[in-house]
Image (cartoon, rainbow, N blue to C red):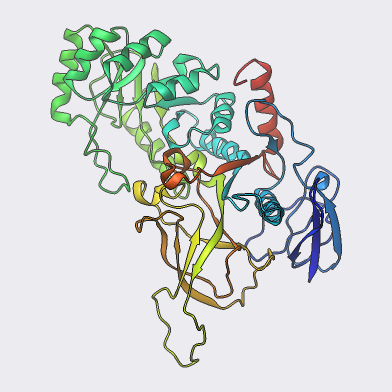
Length: 483
């Protein structure tokens, strides 16, 4: 088995991680198809590659200045963490190796959990949106993930923003985004929030009740209003109809009240029905766009709009996607900080398999942190092994044991995964990975038990979209935005 000996800028001794195979590569490849695929480092050129089935065995000595993204980053935004280059797998491994160096130096919290955010994935999702829904302008749901790099990139790409509070509005406008690119998509707002939105020039906002209309008439009479209609969301994971949305039977009365108060209703949210009396009509088709079903959803939506609105002159359509943009762009690496297992691990070969976990692993992030999405967003965490016994190669033949995964707090509700197969050889100090951690994770994390919120390592990615991301952000900064 080959070895990579990695020296940081200030180490006293080399740190060795085993990988299955190492060789030079002449071209950039896409990420491996499984977590056990081999890792290849290509020196020189404009990137490093992950490739499969390499035959050359060697020992490669690297310094930190040679690691991808260490010296070639460009601090486009001085107030933000550096923006690195390279495939996220590289930065997951870099983070693990760096944590081992810090642990050897006895640094406190050396093995802290961390995200890797791939901005090229956000960019690719934006291209998918433009290809499938070219006539619908996306207003990114800031509440999903108000990450500073994500907001800057989407602003640079021309997206609008769906904000639910004054804080989100301030965050977006501080980047230099024009207020016309913001919709205040919260039907129930504090009067002071409505007044402040008017002061900063955010006019477009939603409502679903008469009291909200009276409030807006007093605090922001020039607002451009969008009536939010109650929809059937029984097939959604997070049903919002129990809290927001005007039943169709109440809409005519709401529109009459808006007219009586001299308020301007410009559109409808979450419904393709009637009630828009302004010739410049806005239709807000809302959010809920899932990555796996996006093309099908887009096709159905396009067909419905064409059927119900054949003449769309003077007709503006927007949407409020959130998780579609960011869910797949962020991954989390968590360290196994503790383990509970039977004192004797011997077992009879003829013993029947059990679906109950026999080993409990404790990691340094949980439901009070990034995994709050399990409680609030009804998500299911699916761990996989990033490194085990100082190796990034996990053989497919590795014996598995049904295990449970728990967060670091003292609360028994802090369970990340009740039962999942994991290698029997996993021990304290090994690392687990979690994909699809970009939506409704760190944005709702707390610091219960004074555990810090996991930080993010940012990369432009190692494939298509990487240079486009860096160029878009550089142009945005050169115009004086987001600094």
